[in-house]
Image 1: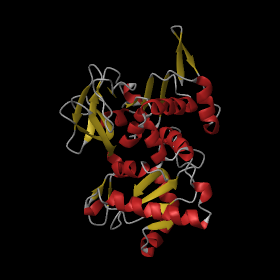
Image 2: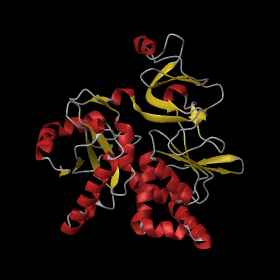
Image 3: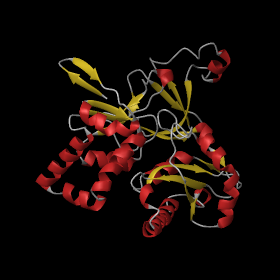
Image 4: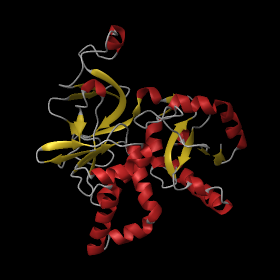
Length: 330
């Protein structure tokens, strides 16, 4: 988090993830860029205290709505934020809309270490939830036949240190960098990320599945903190979810457990209604424990480590499919 003061910059550091919101309130940054998982956790913290339907009603009231929105921003430590951004992974469009409803113009951008994060950005003239913006000045972009985003940027590196083979593999013959990300472009230049090239997996029906767009749909649900879509070699894919932080402690109560299971069944139906037959989820599996950096299931930037999670549950997958239930508690 950073605050601009008298032409200078104050940079604040958080003590830990557990104290993050308190640290944010202390900093009250003017510039704040974070990862989708933290934006989601902030939202879930608000909705745990103020149900979505009631909040939506209050925000529609002319004077009360502005006051409620300001109090929420202040409670998050973001009442002074003039620049708010999300990066590192795709963020659900509904989540961006939610922040804009409370008066925080959250924008999404796109970049990576290899181009010094000089690639795409949203701005007042080019911005839409679900898109990471338009190319920055002098950035060239091309979409390969397999959907991979290819870039040339003034910030592009010359190659990987002492690894000429990897460097050669990472560039096209005409000098475009192979990002490994898949994307789509609109005629007006706005770019949408649709997943990673290497994240594609094939079902037993021979169909390729791109997990990221499905995960975005799942992650937008209030019951879910994060998710993973998998199912290599299976007839249909499945989704594994970590329940929201405010939900996890309460599922030991049988009544809450039943309510959550019904909510997940409804979520499965809603998500599948948006998917072609071959991509529809067989089931939703509830992870027994939250994923974390310490357990090796999240990266330091809070992205999921797919291979680590898939290895951990590999021995159980056959049983899950055999059970034939729409919701499985792992």
